Image (tube, rainbow over the protein chains, first blue to last red):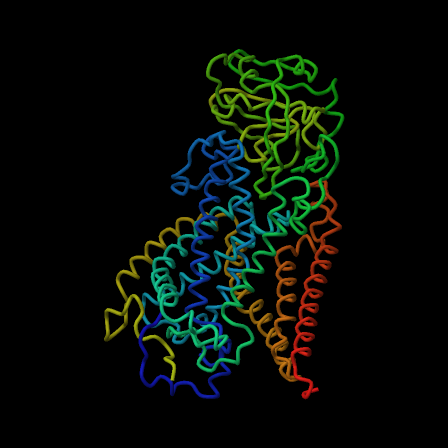
Length: 439
Length: 166
């Protein structure tokens, strides 16, 4: 934000110059100025930081370092520096993290759009570069804007199952986030002090007494963002902020319900998993991928055809569903929480503990990692690995029943994995094979 | 006259003659930033570099040179149109519902347009049919509410106006 005036530059623009977007007179809105840009910038600073952190946490939840089947970004190198063993407590950890990531991302869209609108004159700034540092900063701004839009667009498309982006979502959204955050961090270091200073000065000195008489006072701080020949106002600056906030509120209110069940879900009018549940009764809750989508042939899941193959230190055992049902059964109340941000409340699952299955094949004490393979034909996670701490948790089940009934085909009949705090796709459905051992 | 450009920025130029370099702090910071960009960037571009680059740069260009000018021009024509009839102050009653409805369409376009209908039905087991209707309904409510507010405001204004001006 500028603090001084250059004498004489006023001559540089005349009536003819205002036709060019490079001329300050081209931009007529009386709203543009340090105040609006600073407020929106500070909101985004907080919001984007939360998005980035929850994104990194979500990435860690897949345990990408555990096994290659979990890792969609094997070339990540130092970008995975922070990875840790994903815990099983609290059991709603992934549900909360992913709900915040997606819902907040959607809520911030109007703020991002408003911020970009507020600084659009700078895109056409001339001369293109005043110094080497300025030229580099403008390149960095292209990465900042391109990166932000790339992340928001890939995220918004992915939750609507519109996979038009050029590659795997995990790869694009993860590496894209790092490209974006590199530019974002530089931008914050360069601009946040000025933005905070602006807001402090405006709050302390000028703003309160200026608001009532004139709905849009000339921004009291000098800046190239302030239009030299503003149109008469149609809305006050505060009104503009309410407008942006209203957009955020509308998106929030029509999205957040997809992280809850019952009446709240019905309030999510446009979110992908809002509205009604797919069915009624014990198996009526939200589905990640239906049996048909996964290519499950009902013939494969009959009592005669289906056998669970469990392999470990002492060899391999084949278990029919009836045999599994005669093993000690345990219950756990756990949610389904998807990377797409939606989740269900806790469902009451009943089945065989993973650590009891490990014991069947020679791991009586401390259970090891396990590789789980599904009957499903398609899907990036038809094979997935769970870490020893997840196998050992007494709430981690190979579930046969949910809410008192057999699993439905869409929820993974004959048997599915359910692990506290694990991302939805790691709760493998239609389990065919489990291989215990260090991966 | 307003200053066209600020003379001083937080990082003020060090070199005043010859090729300006700029503040060394800014250069170092941007250098560090670009190093990370490069590290992540080669991985982002590893598979289909051209398509990803098009998406990355295209997103910025599409927003800055298409979306923003479009809505700015639309907004300006609404304001001008109302201005011509002497009702400039009513711009908000069109602008707010239109912008909110447009925002919802922008975010949920794949679902509202039905372009992912088959995958959505197969994937979630839910009906893909309601989205367009719900969006239209929300749009109707937004415009209806704006019209109601405007009507109330006009009624109040009429009541408050002294009879002589009728």
